[in-house]
Image 1 (cartoon, one colour):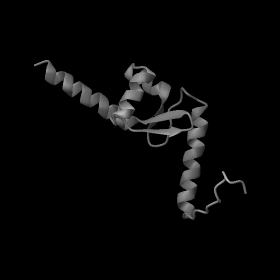
Image 2 (cartoon, helix red, strand yellow):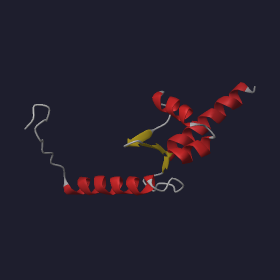
Image 3 (cartoon, rainbow, N blue to C red):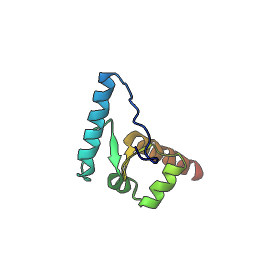
Length: 102
């Protein structure tokens, strides 16, 4: 073993949990290659879908992620957004705009 290599660690998880992890990764990987299809993992959207829904660019989504305003997950270089989080953000923004119009 090289000095830079770390020893292999074994992680034991219940089979049911492992199956869920495999299903999730499989679904995310297949959807990554189909950017115009909505994910079926509890309502996740890819970057392009979220941009289209919000009419915003990647930079705005990055800022909203870093501010903790919207929920997201990364799979490699792909970013996925929880659809309900986007809906909540839109509803909150609409309420704030209604409040400023008075």
